[in-house]
Length: 80
Image (tube, rainbow, N blue to C red; front, top):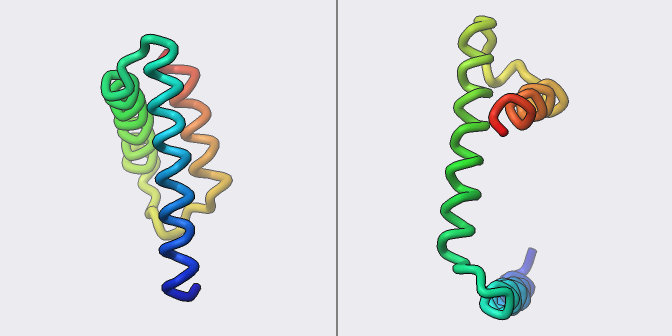
């Protein structure tokens, strides 16, 4: 990617983030709280994946994305 493309994409992504924050404001949702809730959910799910990898004696480098996705899907069901 060229530097100009990256700058343009950063600008577009910024526009999207700004629009999402405005949507949250319109819906009377605190965007910071919503993001914190999502971050905590991600941490719980990722911790589950780490635990499964450790329990099974696996190495991260040996796992496929499909295998990691299985652990992720399992975490989604368990941690609701």
